[in-house]
Amino acid sequence: MANPLDTDAGSELFSNYEAELKLVQADLSQKLDQIPDLQGEPRKAAISQAERALEEARELLDSMRLEKQNIPQANKVKVNQRFRNYESDVDAAKRKLGGLRDDRQALFGRRYKDDPSSGDQQLEQRQQLLSGTDRLERSSGRLRESQRVALETEDIGRNTLADLGRQRETIEHTRGTLLESEGYTDRSNKTLKGMARRMATNKIITIAIITVLIVLIVAVIVSKFR
Image 1: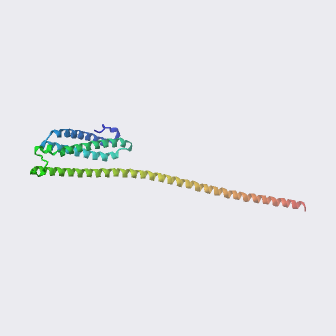
Image 2 (image 1 turned 60 degrees about the horizontal axis):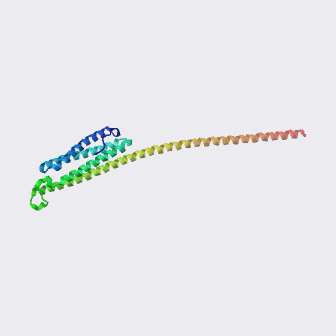
Image 3 (image 1 turned 180 degrees about the vertical axis):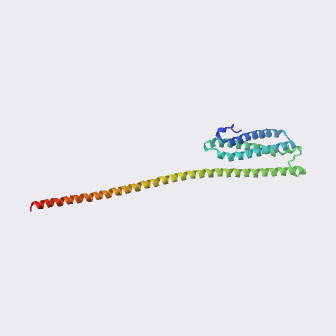
């Protein structure tokens, strides 16, 4: 059987489904243990009850499969393990019920014959009914499997969208940082250009002052020799 309840690792609704499933599993197990001791109509009635319990268990599993998607990621590992255990239990009960259902001799009592052409029309009709039930069961199984794959695909798609959203936020943050860096670069270029212009101006002023001084010195020397 599956692990005991652990309400700390899942949502309250998931835990409620889990508790209900355990009750249904216990009832189903009891019915499966009773069937081998029965024959004829009582056996058919017990099998029908077991089939209803099995269908209820599957519906609870489907509800749990949907609800576990709302469980925080940190708790999903433990919850998924418990869910797989429940699925394994239900599949084992399904196989056991299938074996009991296929035991036609116990189901129909001494009227069962291996040769369907023996003239027992009622037995042939019951065999056809069981065959139709088996086909319906297989179709239902395929439908449930398709539903499971669709739910898992939806879960993967949701996680992928969440990852893409986080990546988009990272890209936008990086873009903002680059734009801010470009702003700093532009201001630095403007500062350097201003410094270059001031240096050029200072150089021109220095040359002009030196030129004036030279002219004055020459003028003083010329005036002394006159």
